[in-house]
Image (cartoon, protein in one colour):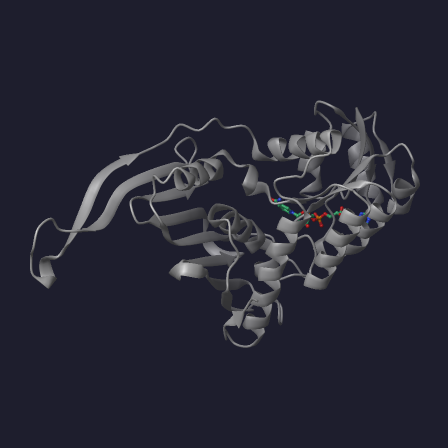
Length: 335
Ligand SMILES: NC(=O)c1ccc[n+]([C@@H]2O[C@H](COP(=O)([O-])OP(=O)(O)OC[C@H]3O[C@@H](n4cnc5c(N)ncnc54)[C@H](O)[C@@H]3O)[C@@H](O)[C@H]2O)c1
């Protein structure tokens, strides 16, 4: 049984609290939030949990084995670094940090101290993403040509990070996970309407080796609530629509193929319109799977699927995208 502490019990931290309070192999001992009112809300809902307002009290507690951090992104680096320095295993929400150098520092600190470092890339624990990965890895989709992902709604407008850093970590982590590689160049354009210099809408393009391409559109200023990823492969196409209840993944047996036999250039390609299939998914709440995975990795000393290096790769793309955004969309290459 490992003893856990949760730091940050705001809008998202409450979801982590609900899951961590009810997991096999873990005991959520302390909830820490610098806001007294948050602590009172926690106490009224979960009487047996101790509350604290100072994270240093958590770091100094020798009975705490692991810490989950769900505070605003601007605090992630300092809190995660202090947790590692104090000998704790760490789960930190996305984005892991707001600076690539900080991400590298955290990964190096965790590896040197032999601590588990995991990032909350929630969609890597989604059954639909697992299904897409399986379809790719078994060759059913053929070679991946291109992907695009949309994460839009009229939602929480943050003041210390733009829509790119707030929303795109999910899409970037899924795309890197599916393709199993990092982009060689990125280019981003966007615009700020509500607050000066904080982009509300961003379009991010990523170029991968062998002409693979991905496009992400994020916005918290949009009339539609959209959570959708489309992948076009050489054999089939697949759409993951998280706004659908049961039928979240659809596989389209559509494509373009060379015609049989000799024909002139104009007739040499055939469009194929085959069946649409809806694979059955075994749906468990992805957040529950993510929280259990952290507990299992801490217990068994295994590397998380979304480990610190995964967090670092995503921050690297975000950092390059931010530079492109500020340069009016000029491509930024990644070594
Ligand atoms: N994985 C997901 O799908 C998902 C969804 C939403 C948010 N998030 C992430 O979760 C994190 C928190 O987001 P949120 O929407 O809950 O924010 P929030 O502002 O609602 O909550 C943050 C909480 O942290 C507390 N806090 C701030 N600084 C602190 C400190 N130094 N020590 C202790 N407590 C502190 C605040 O009092 C607040 O209660 C962010 O990193 C966000 O990106 C992830």
